[in-house]
Length: 129
Image (cartoon, rainbow, N blue to C red; front, top):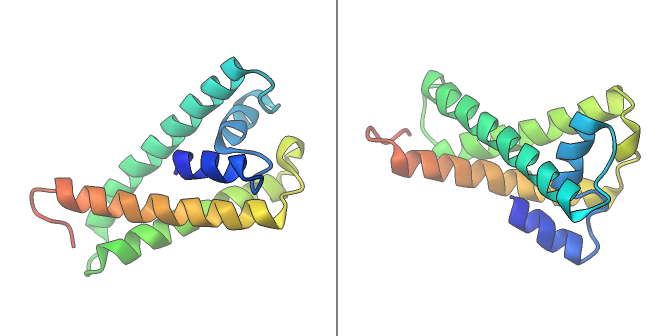
């Protein structure tokens, strides 16, 4: 997810990369130096790891098949919830969110959900379905 976001940032699609999101939600401003960008990326990876743990527990509670669909829905739900929270709370460092940012974040959140589900499926001894 972070690699895709950085690639889309290099092409100019993303105004605020995920490291800006991580840093600004904790610090209140976007990254201005490499050190701040690294700290922001670490915060974002910690957030994504926490979401992975939540997904691992949630997928066991939801019966049925289609683990990839579950992962995709989870990724899209997180994308939706984070963007709604930023807008509802009026969080200025990240607003307004351009349409290209919304689309790239949707894409990378979808990738995150699919990779998360596939990874959990491959690592699970009982093969979560």
